[in-house]
Image (tube, rainbow, N blue to C red; front, top):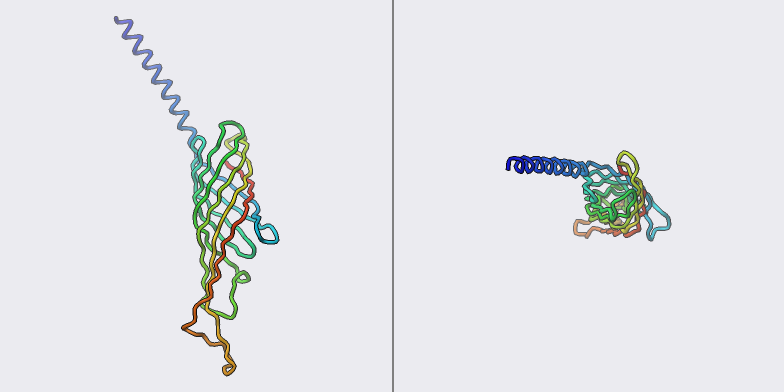
Length: 200
């Protein structure tokens, strides 16, 4: 009887040790990860425009959750998207395809030569919603690094408003009309987003 109890205790301790090692290994699969992305935006404009993004977040097993900040152009309009990013590795291995989805807000950051103002004042610029979703492929390297590429569809919105100045034949300078409705230019940019990425 004593040998039975002793054997049971030894087996229980061995099981707890194995379980502790498994839990430790599982916990080690959760780590901080940074992702750098650079690429091109292709759409209805006559030429391609660049984009750059930095993402920081947590990689847990096949999932990555993070916060991203970027700068991009579409036509002559510069903006800064701030967004949440989620991506899922479809295969566990050295290389894997992945799915990603981004959603957030696009801050307008126009230079003076990018603003649409025709003899007006009270100029205001604002951003709007931003999202990007697509597929990619990455290859895992040593030291938790990985390189890859992705292709997706993205949308961002910007808006400009200003009040036009009214010119009169009798007055030498333009006059403002307080009852005048402001001009509103709302841009909805839809484009293909091609990116190279490096995570570490």
